[in-house]
Length: 300
Picture 1 (tube, rainbow, N blue to C red):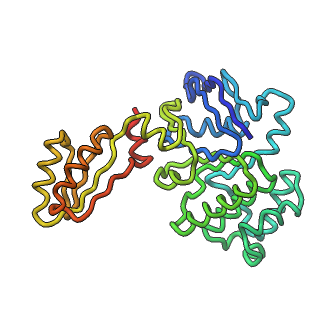
Picture 2: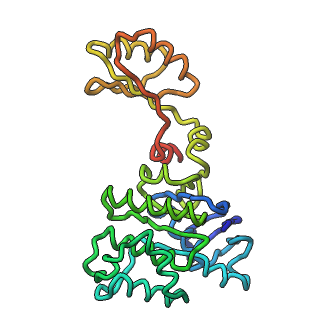
Picture 3: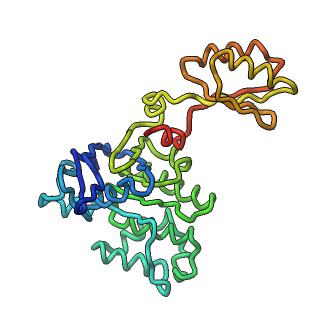
């Protein structure tokens, strides 16, 4: 499903939650949405789900707007995994999914198609009240997939999960996406977690999307510096620090035998060439792109 926001503004009285947001999410794309509290992220998610309508502008789903007759059919193709969801603790996992399937107008066959990839038979026979946080997130994801959605919206899907649970959940999503080719919109405040999981990201602040693109496009577009880390040999720090300062680098930190500094892209080859002339001063070095978190804080 292709999603298009055309100059979308959303107001609540005098409060402007979103202002002239233009965004396009391609069919089959995994798109990450990041931003602090109050950035308009939740409002944009509600528009994606059709819970609210824009004050100005339009939101199109495969070319269909929220005001057109075809919207009802489009809505049936959207799956939603909220950050928090309440279950009836006395129901088993299977009974819980039966309940959601009835709400969505589906049957048991829909459940069976989803379950094999997400929940084991043994877990389905247990009451949800005895589920761990990871198991509750799995059944939360399962209910979002019952209608075989063309668009899957995930709001903080790994909230409360330990590292193993995070890896398992993203593994399930990767497998499902390879089979179904659905469009996924993922909202998260854990930037390091999603940077390898999305094809593009939208960074929101103060009701606007400040930047969109792949991580590579964001790195280049904002000309953020690379990060240089040099593992120093004994007494090598003074020579390397002096060398870097001579090249105009001044944001230099040395701790526990490692030197870290920002490396402007246009100085990369010159600086590395100079470092390599002093191999007796270091044992190794790495150059890496900035993280999504560094991109986020580099955008004003």
